[in-house]
Image (cartoon, rainbow, N blue to C red; front, side, top):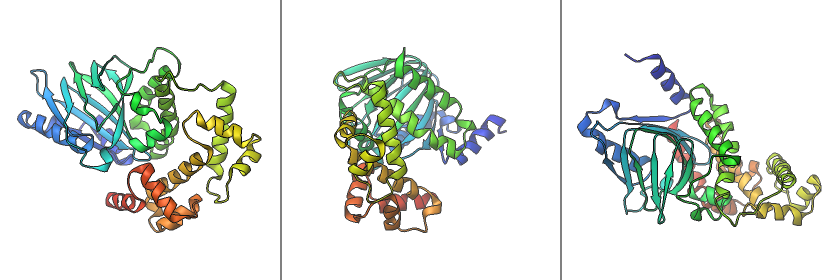
Amino acid sequence: MVNKREIKMNSQLSTLQGQRFCTDDLPSSQRLNWLKEIIGREYANVDVSQIADEPVFNDMVIYPWLYGTRFSPIKTQPLQIERLSREPTEVSQDNYFAVMLIDGRYKLEQDGREVFLEKGEMTLYDATQWHRITMPEPASKVIISIPRNYLKQRLSHVSELTAKKISVKSGIGAVTSQTLQTFASQLTTLDTRSFQSMFDPLIDMLTLSLNQLSPQSVELSRSQNTTLFHIKRYIDNHCHHPDLSPAIIANAVGFSVRHINHLFQTEQTSLMRYVTQQRLNRVYRRLQHQQSMHQTITELALEAGFNDMAHFSRAFKTQFGLSPRQLREHVKKRF
């Protein structure tokens, strides 16, 4: 008999277009191979080893977020997971994984480093490179799967940040961890709009937390951060205008083009690269919606502010790892 909690979870899966994969309905003898197959298909090619006598248990839910990012709460019995040597079989597997431990113990090995997580702590790893994860006791965690190109636009030095512990004792790390834990615990209460609206603030907080791992990172003062926030907000509201230029932006926000570019350099980008990214993000969001299916890709690109379709197509594939047409075909299969 399905209990109220199961009914609520199934309803929320439908609302947020999530998928649940759980070993509960399988015979014990089949669970390990099934889990290896699911992780290989949804995350990375791995070998899975049982490190306890009790039957294998794993319950994972995958919610598609924005820009190819996915949010996955996972509960598991003790396991060891090791990345196999073969290349990713899908473009969608070319990701970094941000991990936050909710309960239990967790060890990650990658790039010659080991990191041990306790409750609330976070780390990052490259899903395409060798890694080994050991959970010696029952554990709960959240994985945020972030496409490589998307994260590299925010952190050009991201490859240097893997298998390092993000401090959650104070500062932005503590805020990020607490917010992620609350967000994960409230998923069954969120509608689609609320779920999607949390993407930008949570990814921004995660990016800031990761950036603190690098001693070379450039710190902005509070006033500079506020200035950059207002500039970004202006761009977000006006990037669909094809004639938007550095001069127009500078005049609107009251700062020189040189000063604005200096602020964006601290995020390893430039003013107009940020404008292009926001235009691409607009097209990506529209391509994800069934209501936009009647519009051509060219129409969506023009509405977002592009006037060079060849440049748009190249930039889109660079940012998201697949062409606009490939994304549309993928979305069509969902509806």
